[in-house]
Image (cartoon, one colour):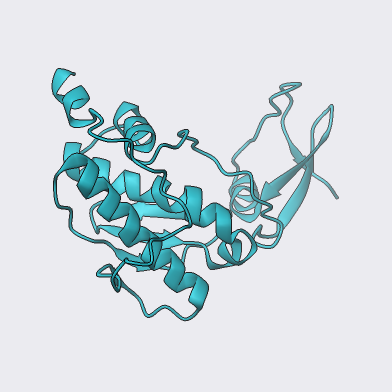
Length: 194
């Protein structure tokens, strides 16, 4: 524990990893799939900025990840730890560019940094929370509040004794194969609407 606290001891007040990327930032050394838009290039540049900030704060170099924009579904971004890869949701990025620059990028970068420092730990555990607070000056949040209506897949209507439920196609297919889902409110089994 003492070693962990020493690693995160503040040397100087680190600015939050924000969308304001310094103009002195050289061309990104982060590997990536070819960026197709200016916005995607801003994300790649922000990843590099977050890495530089972590290296200054922790006084340690880190290998740069591959950055892609092929994350699907309602997830804003993901970190593939063993592959050292970041994926961002292109659709959510277009609708929420500032949130991606200020919150999503440092969130995902923190996952990779923690993995490289500590190996296998809880995804949003103490080490990740400390990285978010100490290095990026951000409150560690595990879920985003973005509108996901554009990326939400088809849903199916189910009913219990107290209300209507919407199941994703994955859960609907499992229900068709015999899986039973229960309502958290009334405890009765969900049944497909006719």
